[in-house]
Image 1 (spheres, rainbow, N blue to C red):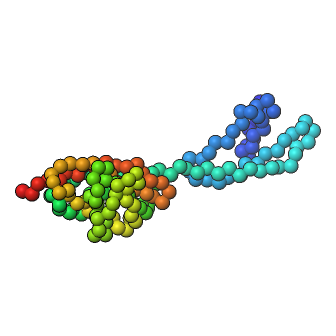
Image 2 (image 1 turned 135 degrees about the vertical axis):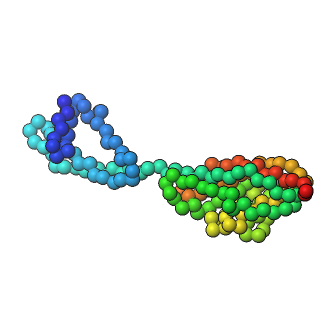
Length: 167
């Protein structure tokens, strides 16, 4: 039977050893666990093991409302993009994706090809220059955006871009 000692130590019977485990901390922590064995006569020297607990990174989550723009018009959307990161990590990159069209995004004043599986990636410092460009005719399409916190990419967030005929 296990015996608990006031200094935090625990004696574990040999038949209980298979149920001994070390629980990780709720936060990032490195700690040392020391142990020794008793052969019925003498105690062995202390041996130690370093146990490191690392909290998994929470990926950032992007929020954006559906948008509209006139045919062939361009609209800056940087203020429509918001990001939450449960860890408080700094967002270092974004990527945008055209799911059906091509050249609907403008970054740093230039239309970008955001087609393909990974879309178009850019530094977070360029977010203030992010715009959408309307198609040549009225319609709707789904676009996507994701953020990177230096460790993990968040999931793609869909939003609808409606290209409206001029009024």
